[in-house]
Length: 210
Image: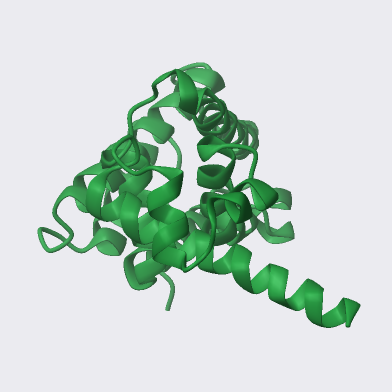
């Protein structure tokens, strides 16, 4: 009986997250109430509060459920250990490939980019966004420091500036694609713009695989 209860509770939690994902995309986060989510999921408002503290907690759970694998793609042992930028760039291209081909991932990123306002009740969502942003900046800086150290030429800019530039490039590219996914090939554009940026830093751009 306990196992069944736990299974049922997980099913309810997933139904609430599915409903939130759908409604946030259709109506926007601020215009979607917890009651709307409960009703769409076929659950009670009490069930929402059983699983989530508030809307921000539910939103962050929705994001983490879908995006948990992205950070791991950029933190493979090969990407972190080798001096050149090749493995790290390939891991970033894999992230773009995942976004371009995974409808659920694309949807939650669209919600996080274009369907949300960072009002007071969503302060925890903004905090999570900032944490993820800083984690990626740290990944970028570590990879670029290794590349600068392995280069025969002196660094053109400080690593923290180079890391920020790379972050802005990727985020801007992704925001543009999420606004109009049919406008360009996210993976090809990502590979090309990253390579161009690295050449501007004096870092040899890794060639495309095979």
